[in-house]
Image (tube, rainbow, N blue to C red; front, side, top):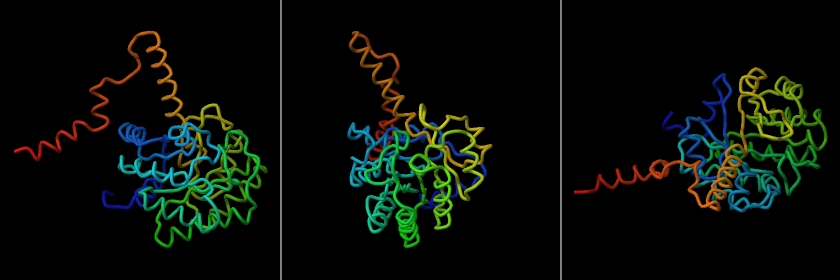
Amino acid sequence: MPDATPAARLRALLARDQLQLMPCCFDALSARLIEQAGFPLTFMSGFAVSAARLALPDTGLITVTEMLDHGRSICQAVDIPVIGDGDTGHGNPANVRRTVEQYAAAGFAGIMIEDQVAPKRCGHTGVKAVVERSEALRRIRAAVEAREAGADLVLVARTDARSAVGLDEALWRLQAFADLGAEVLFLEAPRDEQEMERFCRAVPGWAMANMLEDGLTPWLPPERLAEMGYRLAAYPLSLLSSAVAAMQGALADLQAGRAPQTRVSFGELRRIVGFDDYEAFLDRYTE
């Protein structure tokens, strides 16, 4: 679907009866590596962007302007659909609507909106509070109305109520989000496989799993997630944590007076960032 919008291409991908693996990116380079590895989509992780751009924790410190600036670079660097982390929508329903409109204009294919109180935090670091049901529903309704008014994004509705209140409340909210028009449903931080299976059985729509290494949710192979009924498997910090480990190793090598061993060649790095394409483009203008 070369001429389809990013959202249309994402919906077509999700409509396939199979689990889609979604490594999350933290900048344009990581997004390009995801695309070059053959993955069909990616997610701009708020945790990862806050860490990579600001070296700050995912506790609501990064602004929507910074997320949008980062997101434009990511969306321009790849052709695969990109879902953006919209956090709490950054305010009241008017803010939510504007956030959705801005994410659509930036080139995203989808946006995630959640029900934590502001400032939010990473769902695997001890969420204590979510907004009241009425406020959670207002956020999703505002996002749906923005989508229907022309800001066409796939809406990922997330709840952190499992950690803050309990599983029953989380499932009630997800059902209500689906009823309002959310397309992808995301139960953050279920504690075991039984809770994950109950979520997939109880809630309509496309279910998303969050496979965070060392997180609160068990890390399961794709085959098991597909068996449960998940349509999306996000890997939020796999690339960032691996990149940090590689950089720490390279720094240790340099301190020891040797060239880092775990690295791509200079030629491969030039290819990844587009030197070959750049030279080929200029050759077209050479007499």
